Length: 129
Image (cartoon, rainbow, N blue to C red; front, side):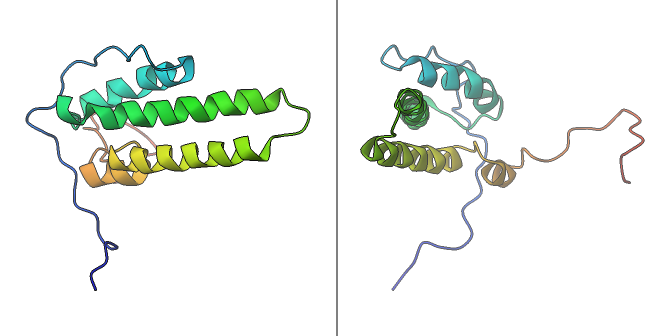
């Protein structure tokens, strides 16, 4: 029996990566659009998103948007709706999985090498050499 646990493959910049962030799709709610605007500059700079896998980023943003929208709705309720809470948890799980897939978590960024310190030309007294 084969299992899928263990070391994940290293992400690397793609030669066909997008160089400019497209506008957020109109079908997204305001929370999803805000997440799109927040993450796209970083994702574009790391050169890991191509036109063909842009849907995954859209799905991530829509999951974040739905989770935030549910949180706002539940904040107005005197007694939280447990069905909504369960739905919110599923959206958050989906967002977390997609975030890891596209280098939006510290661990997944380390796999791409983007956590490496930038060229340090300044004199930082706290820097350990």
